[in-house]
Length: 174
Picture (spheres, one colour):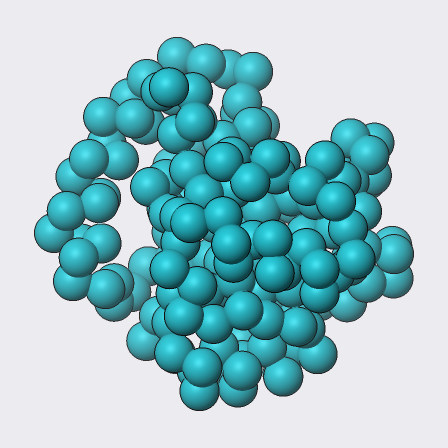
């Protein structure tokens, strides 16, 4: 059961995503978490380097979308800036929001990656939905109080075990 909390890959940042590697894995779609994965939770401005990555992945033929537990207003405003479909108020880790995103993208679980910064929402939910999960180190900045007070402390235990599994990791540890 603990394996459901392990990502397939663990990388320092969304900017470390290698579209060629994803293609070699047979992936055609990518579902992104929003807050502290592609944009800081306390910001509405998408970093230019993230926009560049999204454009590069689009040129490579990837179908992309967003699944976020955040509000409709925030999620739709940010998704519109990147011209991506989105599922808001997702209630991750339930699999329903991931299935809705797959329908929006027109991809199957086996050909879709989930990229997120939280083990107990993004990675667990993505694994339960049968997605190829990629954990990123969260962006610096404000976090939801529940994440800060509860999840991040529990994640440290999972991360300690994850560091002993080099097959799930590429890139640099922070």
